Length: 393
Image (cartoon, rainbow, N blue to C red; front, side, top):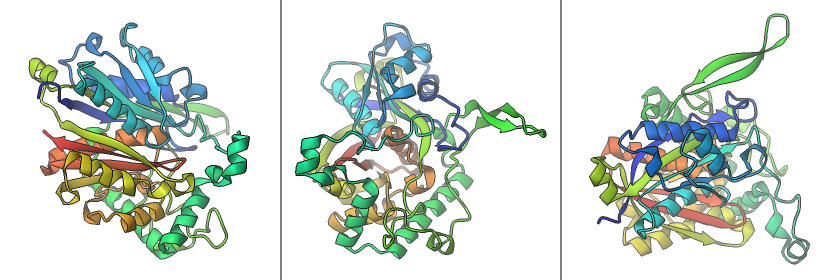
């Protein structure tokens, strides 16, 4: 058991709306640094010099998220210059990938303490269109490789018979669950408030900077209804079902977890929150990316020997309502346990942060409910899906 990988601390920033939310003027490397500082503050028994690596996921590691944002954020957070850093990119699964890499290295005996997480600022580094520089040979041989995610999910909706009403109903439930969770303070323990500045105008119309403290996610809407969702126009094709209301929001945010060996946690007298059980990925044709989780999940469960009925809490990223519903049509999940606190449609989807954010949310949810197993899963562009399994300690 000494080489078991455990998560001993977990924290995230609030999720800001992009590109006009409260975090729009906050650099992604600063957001990541805030998450690093916050997670270390949750575990004072760990000396920063003991951290052997900082691994962060980022889906658009360019611009202000470039130059190896994990290493930049580690330095910005005040970690010793001797602390390495690595940025990983598996599109929307990047944050979960970072956590899994950290846990697997610890389980292999290659490290004792690693800080992992994810970050994305879709305000500061807008999501890059993958069609901008397509490989000419691949584009000629398999043009659907570069089909937009929206059009890809429209195809999946038709293939699996997902209706506009079903997608809107799922989206409404996401908002209702997220609003209820906010009202009940269920996110409070996992969120580290962010102090930042936003640009406003004074009474004379002159631009000015105003200091604010963001303490909660900006995405959930308590005024969402089936009627308001039905009024939204399809976003990708005139006869389509995907709208801005039943797809995930563009967002800004960061999340971090402290991963260490069970042996190290015991030596420090630190009580773990989660035990890392396993992680796997799956891939289909690029245009089928939305249902790839339906293949990653059973693959993971077979390897770990845990049945789907034993999973108490499932964090599914909700890139689009239709892809969650289509995935459930392929591999049936206990939907009452899927995103009980809402998902990316309501909370927001800061791409490379989301997987780590889901791990953070899962850690606190299982501690609160007493559930045993939790699953984190998501689709990723170019046909991929990922799934990670964790156990409450």
